[in-house]
Image (tube, rainbow, N blue to C red; front, side, top):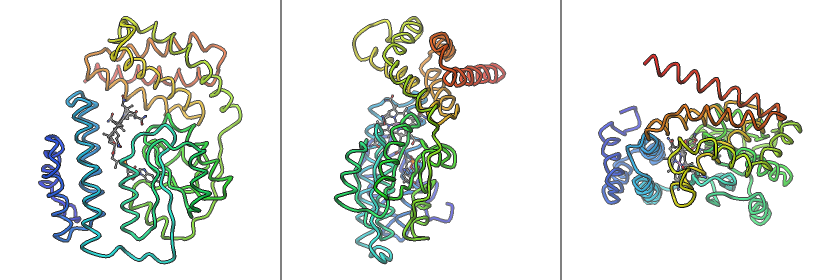
Length: 354
Ligand code: B12
């Protein structure tokens, strides 16, 4: 227990429900906590959110299949809804004050919707009026909703850092419309570093922080400024334009080591091509925000992912080398690839000492 009324046993029981796709068990456990007096926000943030992180670890390590992850996430989604509706029946939402309209959206390309859903329910429990647009919202859709519904603030969620260039367009769009942007999610980097680089006005590490930041002061102000440099945008655009041929190039370079690449059609091939495509997108995003950690962070994930599937992660060195040879005239990309190479070698060295 950590002062929230959620015991380790409750957490373990909830994990068991997710592992068994036990909807009834999960709902009974979570709503039981709320009716017995545990704060609904604590149940959302102390029970469901950390359980989802463990779901991710079990998928990444190969312990769970994608289907198991989907089933577990479905149960979590139902649990979030049940917690919110139970909380509304046991007590009226907190002080609403003057209307505080928040528009919640995921960054363009982002299909991790559950984090934004948890945020939505936490803000509603705190008395905000929330409109939620769900996954992968284009700047155009965002702007049209802002015009139609006039929110006081847009809350933008980003889980995957390779979506940062797209998130930048959304932030710029809101800036043009004069609406402040609050950001959150691990995709925005440590302490929201990349959110501020893109010109966001606020960043909060979790939904509780979001609610508190929005309560004081109100209304939120537009104060962010993008520090993305023109040279970085140009270098990013070059990588985006070259993406098809770069993908073909790395696919060829890794055809003997990455399962599925030899087989030119079918599911396995598509998965492997997606995997490589995401590495290219991370490289491009790192160049865009001028921070190699976007790329090295994703390489670290990719190395763990491959090792768990019995593929030698050193094949990622083949990838960085193949790209280095191809991108000789692109200094920003080369610096980022060199950092990626160092990161892989250091990881390899530390593993061989374990
Ligand atoms: C469920 C899940 C999915 C589901 C999402 C379904 C859904 N409806 O949401 C699906 C199957 C779609 C999915 C797909 C993929 N996923 Co996924 N996924 C997850 C998982 C297991 C849980 C996500 C979640 O709900 N987290 C729980 C929430 C509560 O945590 P949170 O993000 O930190 O959110 C809190 C705060 O950040 C904050 N917050 C969030 N948004 C905002 C916004 C604002 C404004 C504010 C203020 C605060 C705020 O508040 C939240 C509550 O406090 C994560 C594991 C993880 N660690 O999160 C992997 C994970 C994110 N996925 C991962 C990957 C790789 C993928 C795929 C690329 C897999 C693939 N296809 O090969 C795709 C990409 C899809 C895409 N383009 O978006 C990796 C990312 C690794 C990386 N760094 O690159 C992770 C980390 C898994 C792992 N351990 O490896 N995934």
